[in-house]
Image (tube, rainbow, N blue to C red; front, side, top):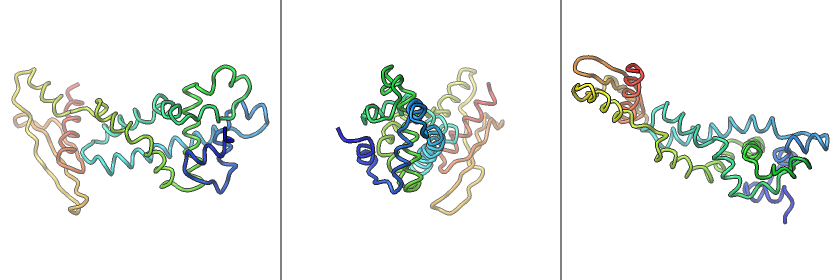
Length: 226
């Protein structure tokens, strides 16, 4: 079995200029307490932010039809402990983490919280050693499918359908969507749409496409009806 640093450099596809960063990233607090060294908790904190940027950037650039609220839900589902620990197990990182004796014997190498925290710390180490682009490339190499699955399985809610079902239940007419503003160059348009029930404006929202703006308007309308 290769040593831990060799394994992780191969996994990340990156040779560290600062190998100490990598060692810290895989050092659990239980090991650090035994050896009087630094654990990965601070890197974990940073990695959470780096991970969030990678996923947010992907959603913003690749999914213009998704509203802000929908992006928040997809991101949360994609970067949760369950998702990160699942990918950590697939990558087989558990046996290579530096764990204290007690943590190791109690099954820490397969504990979801330990694995997820280590993934965030590894992402942070990659970010500090090579920058956001390299860190994002690694994140999306394993997380893109999870993000798209979250979208397909309903983390993104169809607010237009939900609004139509709600008003139909009250024997009201179908909501009407109107573009009330459009700005920006052709390659970066932003649309603002209002949704009306007869002559009453139920909500207004904006997006990078008419579809996204309509969904945002429907979401606002539903919030006002709750």
